[in-house]
Image (cartoon, rainbow, N blue to C red):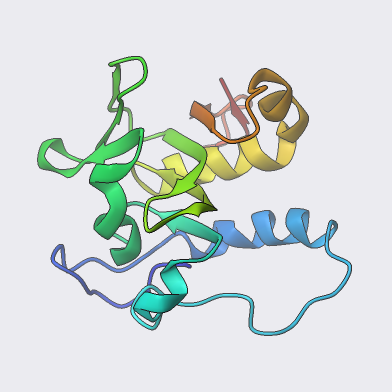
Length: 170
C-alpha cells in the first residue's frame, strides 16, 4: 500500500516515496514466480477488509493513511507530534535525522495471524535509506534479525561519494 501522491489525510500531505519504490519493486520482482496486476493499492483506495491480510506499507503516517491508522500499535513508531521522528519501544531510543529509515516486519495489528512489512522513513531521504538498506543489504538485515516473526532495522543514509545522493547506509 503506497501513499496517494495527492495531498490527503489529517496531515494534508502527498506521498513522495513513489520513485524509490521502483528499486524495491525490482528487487522483490526477482523473487516472484507469477504476478497478477495491479499489486499495489493507494492508501486512499484500500478497503478496511483488505487491511486484515499480509501487508507491505510504504511511507510514514503523514504520507500513508494506513500507517497513520496503525502507527500507535507498532513496536517502532513515528512520533508525528515532534516532526515525525522514529521511536523504538524496544530500545527506548528516538531517531530524528531526516535520513533515518525504518524496515519493520511484525504482526499485522489488525489481524495478528497476518504479517506486516513497513518500509518507511522520516522524510523522503529516510525512505530512500530504508530502500537502499533493504535492496543492498538484504542478507545482513535478515541474518542480524534471527527472529523471523519480527525484524526491526533502523538505518541512516549517507552520501558516500559527495554527489548529493544517498548511496549507502549505517
